Length: 344
Image (cartoon, one colour):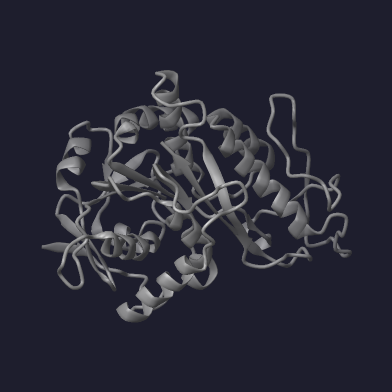
């Protein structure tokens, strides 16, 4: 059986299974049982999440908030959508047909071969070769969480219980809005199926000269509320340069980053694909999983247009936001991590 190796284990996260399992559980245990106006965690019928994919020392605790919200009670398969960081793709790609599973330090996760073959039969997907698959981290960083949750939710008496739920990994390239709508429509029947879980892999703002992104909103006061996307709201900002000798303080850079991220998060929460695209156009925010998020949002809009969702069905609610550091100087850098869920 051909397996994709856990190529980032031992560097981005520990390759010791018991240590990894204990670490994941400690982060899950740290998530409160209620968050703001969300009375109970996990949330019934929460079948879609957005979660980060950085090294676990950076994003592991934040990702736990999304995974703790998941309702796996009816789960029969998991769709994992991640952005391509290394391979240029104009569309979407599926794993090599020769692969049967994805490996983790906790054990292997089987692939859903029938569903993958059905998707391949549409002739709308590229195929990843094994080297490109193993070079990418956006899918792999979710596999230990998935395996851990499936193992602990299994009713099997076997110790440890085998993960019964197969995986449908999809790598998403630099898609344009029309392509996101096309694939959202293609995946919408799977989104509508109450036995499917969808995971969108994404970090949020990558800020700093090393990311070639230094967008800054100078007109905000530190106490300003996060920007709400509307048809008439336009976000104005400037790009800071290394020639900027005096660090801005009103607001600080990290406060501006938070506003930029929250503008995107608020747009996602509206359920409007176009609202999200508008904020991305205006801020250039380096949300690396913007295309997986866009495909899922476009698919949910298809279901909403068919009246297959309630008024709030399929709308994301964010439960955690963190940054790797608080940037104050132009030479600083940070990456943001956000977790969200949607009830279907």
